[in-house]
Length: 107
Image 1 (cartoon, rainbow, N blue to C red):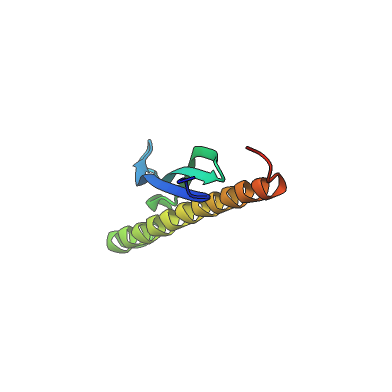
Image 2 (cartoon, rainbow, N blue to C red; image 1 turned 120 degrees about the horizontal axis):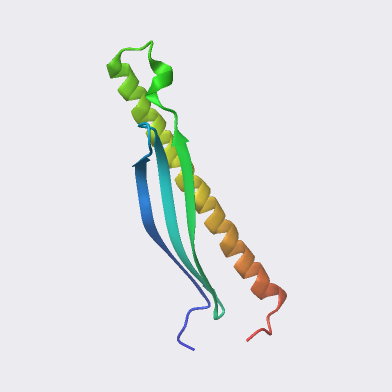
């Protein structure tokens, strides 16, 4: 009876900018999860990607502004993919808890 009723563990596997061909970049966030509800465990990986708007569409601006724009786009994309992954993780936790409360006699 030493195991906790609810246990959640997240592991950030990747939080990075990946360079694709023709110097475009994409944000990646990969989250490993272990969810345990009353002895019923779920494990997996959530991976989210988002392309970062390339600098080529911003040729009218000076190179300094272009790289600043890229940094802002990159930060926004990283925030976006990490938010999406966490929202998915939270819904997985909710589903696991709901599944257990529906069938309390399981295990």
